[in-house]
Structure formats: C-alpha cells, structure tokens
Length: 103
Image (cartoon, rainbow, N blue to C red):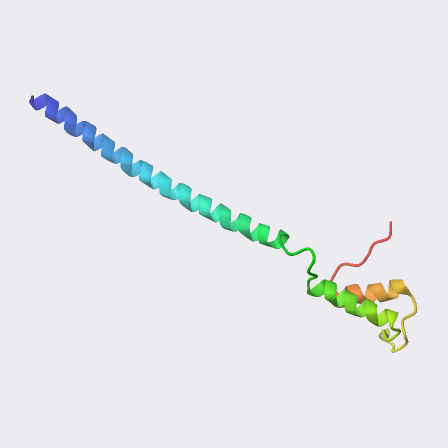
C-alpha cells in the first residue's frame, strides 16, 4: 500500500509538471498567433481601401490635369504648359508618385 501511494504521488507530480509545460506552450502559441494576426491585418488594411474612392495622391493628379485642360497650368518658368506629357510629369511630381517610364 505504501508503494502504491509513492507511485501515485510520482505520477501526480509528473502530470502537474506536464500541465505547466502545456500551459506555457499554449501561452507562447497565443502570443505568436496574435502577433501574426496584427501583421496580417495591417497588410490587409492597406489593400482593402475603397477602390472607388481616390486617395490624396490621385486627387492631386486630377487637380493638376484639370488645370492643364483649362489652360491654367504653368511650368516653373511661368509659361503655360502645352504638352500633356509635361503636365503629367508635373502632376506626378506634385503628388509624390514615380514618373511614367517609356517602354
């Protein structure tokens, strides 16, 4: 009977240490999953912008191209812009976008 109690105590002690280990691993897994979710959600929020609603850069390009159509867009020298490509270059520069590349 005494031997059985000792064995039972050993088993209980072993089970308790296993439970602690599993809890620690579960905590680490939860932390890892939550960090991955926040990174994924952050990336998704960039892609999930409303495609029908233009952002600030697109609006700036629209404003400059409208000025070009109305003949009120002027270059840095003060002369009116006559070429569409020049107007597009000015618009892209003001909006902070990369310039159009020719193939």
